[in-house]
Amino acid sequence: MKSLTVIARLMDYPSAELMDARWDMINFVREEKRLSPEVQESLVAFIDQLCTTDLMDAQEAYVATFDRGRAMSLLLFEHVHGESRDRGQAMVDLMAEYEKAGLHLDARELPDYLPLFLEFLSTRETPEIVQWLQSIAHILVLLAERLQQRDSGYASLFDALLGVSDTQVDRQELAEKVATEERDDTPEALDKVWEEEMVQFIGDQGSSCGQSDVVRQRREELGRVQTLHLQNLQPSAVNAAGGR
Image (cartoon, rainbow, N blue to C red):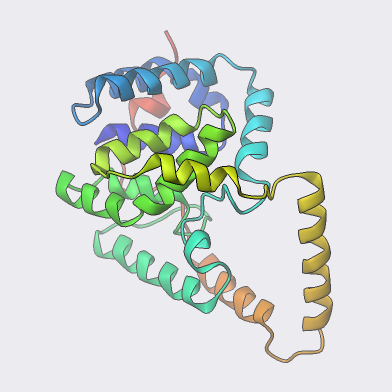
């Protein structure tokens, strides 16, 4: 499903190459039979909006959307395990799935990074794609609703993935829940997190094996594995061709 590769690239940090691939991405989306006409048009509208935005403005908006606070993190297991030991094991297990599929990863990124995961799925058969997406549907729908309530066009990417997965969710109930959440990307919330992490860091200095040591060790182990952008993916027109 080439459309998964398109969604993966759109969900990653905006680049000049992405902007130049506007028409190729639109063509891939319109040719995808598993996307409804409504979802196709929503994706096309987002591609047009993103690719006609000034690059620096698009990058700034991306950071504000996904890199401030954990609520919109694109690291899948952060929504399930946080920074616990279980997250480290889950990432190791996911790496094993990549390797079992014959995929070798060539840039540094954690394996549960959603755009990377979608590139992996783009190499699989449709039944397996649907099964994997259904396994993370609870995360996708939560992110979709949060983006929707923040008036972000990125919501269309998550709606498209939910459409491919054939997942039915009570969005009204979820919308009411999300509406009551306390935002974690405000300056006040970010300051609070920074202060708490500093206290934790100072406390760990006197510990021989604090939680931060466990997390740091796991990240170092994973860091030795080169990740993001799968080597056996053929260079696609999404990267190679410019706009028309």
